[in-house]
Amino acid sequence: MGYANFLYMKEELSLVAVIVILLLYDIFGSQKSLRYFQPVACVLLLVHTLVNLLPSGEAVAFGGMYHNTPIGNIVKSILSFGTLLVFMQAGNWLQSEKIIIRRGEFYVVTLSTLLGMYFMISAGHFLMYFIGIELASIPTATLVAYDKYRNKSAEAAAKYILSAVFASGLSLYGLSLIYGTTGSLYFTDVPAKLDGSPIQLMAFAFFFVGLGFKLSLVPFHQWTPDTYEGAPTSVTAYLSVISKGSAAFVLMALLFKVFAPLVKEWQAILYGIIILTITLANIFAIRQQNIKRFFAYSSISQAGYIMLGVIGGNALGMTGLVYYVLVYMLSNLAAFGVISIVEHRSGKVTIDDYNGLYATNPRLSVVMMLALFSLAGIPPFAGFFSKFFIFAAAAEQGFYVLVFIALLNTIISLYYYLRIVKAMFINKSDAPIAGFTSDAYTRVSLLVCSLGILLLGIASCVYENIGRFSFGM
Amino acid sequence: MEIHMEYYLVISTIMFFAGIYGFITRRNLLAILISIELILNSVDMNFVVFNRYLFPEQMEGLFFSLFAIGISACETAVAIAIIINIYRNIRNIQAKNLNQLKD
Image (cartoon, rainbow over all chains, first blue to last red):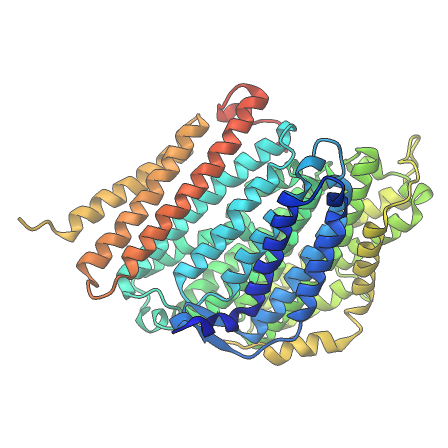
């Protein structure tokens, strides 16, 4: 034991450095210099992402509390890249009148939640995992409440924090029972003592609620549409991709490593939850009018698809899941980039407002179309390949019925994704959203997302590189 | 006089389910928050009792409950800040008035 242990956690250290620099800049920077907050934050985060891009070796530090894996490194890089895109899209909103005085806090708080996700991903002990998940979810509530003069924002935050704390309470109760029956909380020690006794099954069910809540799987999804609608659009984008992606990976790692002896039980639970999640979310998504609410239900059903990578318990599933998270992140951020800029310039958020968008803003419409096609899984785009890999992983383990139901749901989802495309390209409108030019940051981020959607599926090196580091049960 | 572990566990289980019951039935946001605190406190009790009676040679449960207490304090602080914000906006903290966002 010594300070040398810190060298293993270089990603966390460099992120802490970025947070401290931004915090000091926010406190001590003069009003004039604070105008450059967005570029500074973006550059620092970009440097942080690039420095940690290459996966390092497997390392265990602090007596097993911290456990770094190469696949965890990849997920962390994906998450910090996604955060960078969110930062680029958030600039417009942070320049608005009532927010501008607090703009620095947004970056600092968002990066703290990212730090929490890092700890969650690299945890080797349930205490570390618990601190990580709370560090990831408590500041998120403050982000949701960021527009504090808007009542909807406060309401969304109240719903989020109360359900988050409730879910983490249930999860902790499950953990306490696991501790009581196994006598340890280390990920390496727990599996040997898990024997599937009724109390352990109950403990696992309680524990599952905590992550199910963060992933917004169906029985625990009620907060999602309300919070997504009420939160500022950039925060919604962050919640729907970064927070969800990290939770999906952590859930998978925990099920593979810690709860491996209970594999029959958790597969049965997941089987039901996946069917419920995908189907119910699709049915609800069809009747939504508000576009943020629509994407909330869409993200719930995508979470169901992500879980298909977990249920097989194989290395193929892990690769598929990480790849799916990457592609889903780019598609969803492209969509939210468009929603965010449209909302900022015109204040319109319902699907009918998008009627005739192609006539006035052709490029934005095309980006939105790419994102929706990718989310629906139409062939040349990356979304098709990610869905294909994740279905293949589940089918390899013999879950044919489940994959068939998921496929049927893909067709339903195609209907409601195309509804927006139809609104933009075919529907006529008397008063379409006026044409506008976006700022450079939004344009670059949308360009990166579109390139990713177009190229990630064709460039097989990404998938293969993720595949080299994945492991099964 | 020796107090058995079961007595503690009975109390913590009652606290836990009382918390869940309160979370579902209370109408006031602060009362909901208090119910959640009951859940979190029952968890702390569980950890300490398991540690003291079953695994006294290690301190894992004690430390977990210390951290859990600290983190639940953070959660409460943020939740109360948000509730105050709601009070400023609508002059009321009844859950039934949080009805702007719905299907």
